[in-house]
Length: 466
Length: 58
Image: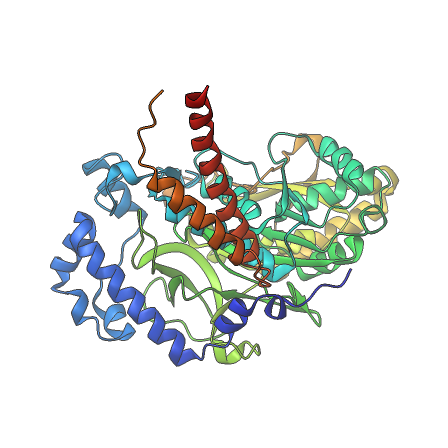
């Protein structure tokens, strides 16, 4: 079913897309100065930051002044602030009795969970910042939408999708974490006319794999499917193309986080792959100011290079972040290089990683997302788990336990297995410059991930992580 | 049962409902769902106040 382009369907969006870069930056500056003036009055944390830097909001006469003089914050700063002023920290910039929802980060880093107070206004905007990327990707009022990300709890990812589907006027089925994969498929078959699925990259892989295992052709079973929307993990281009072909619809991607209070950017109606090349996630820069910097020198990253995302919320009320180092690694594409004609900067699809996930192995910087790309470029691989460890004589070893897809596991001869393992091992070496030991295991020996996959364990002591 | 809230609230809500109906005529597909969301919240507030009034009438 053909639908209007998002810009034809929304004059508001067309107006935003029509902003020139200078106009967008003027808007950012107006919102930024208003936010800083408010934070100076209401947030002890940011007042101390501004006093420490000798900076008043009226002195922020340009975005360049802000970038040069406003101090950075990171996760450790926020956790220390929360310890000193529990539970929200001095970042909370609305009265406590106006906090209508609490969001916390997932805690997967092991350092602790950041806590964010949200006002009623923030909750609506959190919904909007889910509805907006999905609208860009093809979701429309009245559509039937399946949310496969676990709903509820305290995370932004648990609440935002529900609000997003509600305010755009779609019919939401929040099945993540509550129904098994087979039960989800049964539900989808009963519903028939499902138009939209939101899932982590990894879960979409699991769902597609399960459909194929049951002999269901997604394209035939769900002809009304318009968009598959993924987030949170990297993937190879081949995988994206294969998924689009199997489902007969566009694959779209968003970048978001608790610190961004929702999605901060998404693909346009072109999706994640264009002419065999990775697409772009266009950043909603009128809501968040983004800097992309070298994580060591903190200098701005040139267009086309990978850097760390630093985010400033321009209008969040409850617990805004200002110049927060996300630790997220992304390839930056300046607005002039996106080819979109819009004034929005962008980041590359499918390659967003974490600087703190990076492992130093035998002198190489190794990213789990790069290994994912090497492994999952082979469709006969269903899942894998990696382990880096030190042997008794002090050598670094890398073990990858790998499970084949059900069909390959049943039908492959020993020779075909050897060839596949050789190809996977070669692909890992080519992309990461490391040789690994591959071991075949049953699919049931490896976990299924409902949301973000954690496939790697680094068991080396700190002194051996070189 | 005595209704505590001033009757102006009913007038304001009725006016907001009327205005929201106009918003819901929007052809902007990104906004129309949000306008309907707002309208339905107003309708719910009107309904829960009417409920209290019905109890009082009985």
